[in-house]
Length: 348
Image 1 (cartoon, one colour):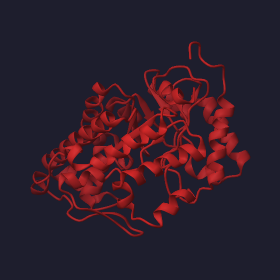
Image 2 (spheres, one colour):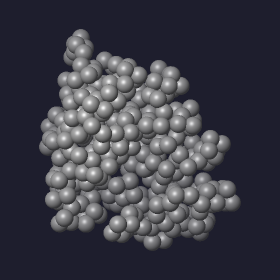
Image 3 (cartoon, rainbow, N blue to C red):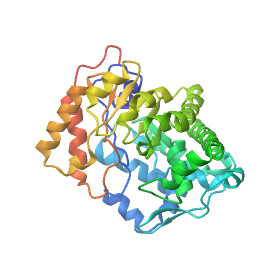
């Protein structure tokens, strides 16, 4: 049943226990990852299919999660669009030629994934062969707003001042940029599915910086374009909008088979607001993994109880922190399975 739990939950079908995976589960909290990282730069790991595949598989083997998620970065497609990208030590991503107006938008191109990100697609093929049906593989990409925020700001931001100013002062340039980012994302994710991804997640990590009116006018149409563009692939689409509890109804309108939830909203309340037509994913506070195990267990039980037995994928409310004790991550997976165990569905 492990091979089917995640995909069945995405489709809101009965499962023998609630599936669980962790955002950023392939990463810096694992000694196995750090052993590789000590020898290679981050971009080298992303662009070397054999390394990306090895890192993707590490938490599947160590934690016992019910899905693998490809080791990559949401900004990788930007290079093919003509955007200079580097990862500065201890500073995160840096955009060398940020977009600040219409002329900058005009020079950007929509990518051809087979030409511009072949290493991502090869990593997917390698992972699928190694998994051999053990668990499904999730592909992913950044949502248009989150990509735009990096492209305009030139890196990470706390205020998103440049991003919002372009949105309000030059709507034509804004929508032109968002259209190119959205179409790039559609092509990129379709190529991931063709290479073997069995579900995809769209990360809108920074969209919580917007109010409802701005989200509806400047973001929702472009996120909807991405998600509707993936419909023909037939794979589940997870739409994760971080820090967006106030936007939940709009996020649902933008689309997704599964709505990812951060920890700032009660998951039972979120299910009631979203209705029965979508599954939900989430939503343990990532810092809870630093708590004593009995505290983690109580939080797990509450989330499982509030989410219900069908159409729920257990996850953190955002990415796992790099200092997280690995043994707590292992225990979390075991707790989710133990406290949600039920008779196998008929015919499975």
